[in-house]
Image (cartoon, rainbow, N blue to C red; front, side, top):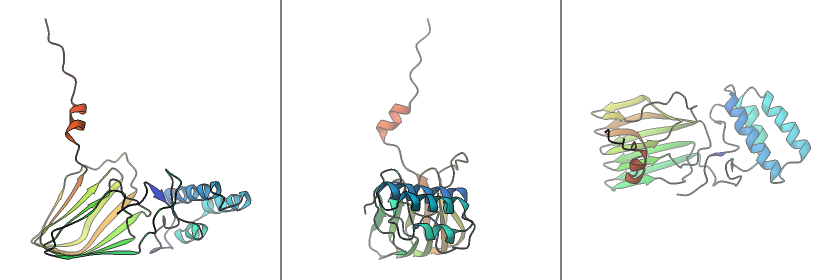
Length: 218
């Protein structure tokens, strides 16, 4: 699946809870979208000033969503439009091998996972993320779900029911990096495993990180 990198757009504020209070990060994402839209000629200077003032004073997610409702989702790193974000992505599989979502795939607002004896890998390291929270509804049996994360992505398994299953988190939290995406696992998994880890370094990268040899003493 393909998309762009590090986007923000009209869906950057979760529409499932529009009355939630807006954070500074929510306002900043909307401001970025408005400035890119003005640079592309989608907003006049007066419209930009008006919407920027409204964004900086917005109190709720609904107020922010209105400001970008008529604008395309864009990437703040490239300034280009991204593929449309799906409300729900459903992954199904029964004894069907492995399912992988990697590269620059567009993360949906909600993901439904209904699999039996099918391995699933969700790689978020280059994914297009347009909202603060991703809810994954799980109804899975057997095999393994692997979540490959990067700094700024946190995984919450508190609402997930485990039946003869295990969870292994291999990535230490980085408290210096602000959270950009919260992945919430809910539902039930039976006779399965869930692994949360960072991207593996290639062998060449590992060599570059090795300390230089110290000169031998006399």
